[in-house]
Amino acid sequence: MSEIRSAFTARVAAVGDRSPHVRAHARIPALLDALRLRDRLDLDLYWIPTPEAADGGALAGFDGIWLTPGSPYRSEVGAINAVRTAREQGIPFLGTCGGFQHALLEYARDVCGLSRAAHGENNPEATGELLIEPLACSLAGHEGTVRIAAGSLAERVLGAARSVERYQCAYGVNPSYLDVLRAHGLRLTGFDDAGDVRVAELPGHPFFLCTLFQPELAGDGTVVHPMIRAFATAAALHAGSPDPVPAT
Image 1: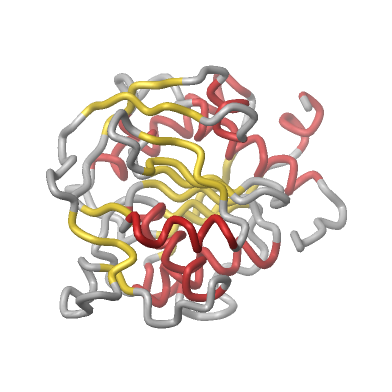
Image 2 (image 1 turned 60 degrees about the horizontal axis):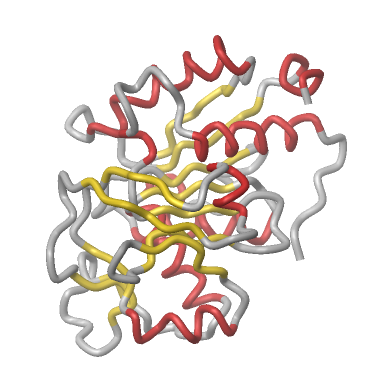
């Protein structure tokens, strides 16, 4: 692992509509510095606005795709395409907050066949078809415990069965869709104390992890959250592979 970390610079697409008003976006440069200095993980990060990500070739050649917070995105199509590209091509993927929501939306549409599944923030008129719906109580500025499923990627990354995480969102997964997501292979591996989904992952993929919370907001921004570090490591491995094999 150390040889891969020192020998390869991973090209990572940070997909999102970068803004100084999104705290997670402002944190990312310091997190990259910490990865480089403390973990010898060097990420060559490219910000890709969601309208550009809608172009089929915009994400070619990247070793990782990070669908960052900051929804509503300017282009739902671009956010969905970022998820699909990572999922189908076996590219390490991290989706946080809005990235979590759109990862589940892509999976519901493209894998589960729920072509009319909708996001309530993007399409509030889609009553009865909302996969992502307003939360009964907004999590904006909230901090809470997340319980992690045993044997999951999330547990291996965190090294713990529970964690306290920070949120900045007001939308979550409609529980009526959970069974169909599970039946089509998505693993739901993190839950709050009320049993609501907070983490999802895709078994068989090199690295595909989504969180409703924002690991970018952990601590004071100088120590990298384990999930971001694991994503960076997976991207470095992808960069070091002479012939990356897409997930099936």
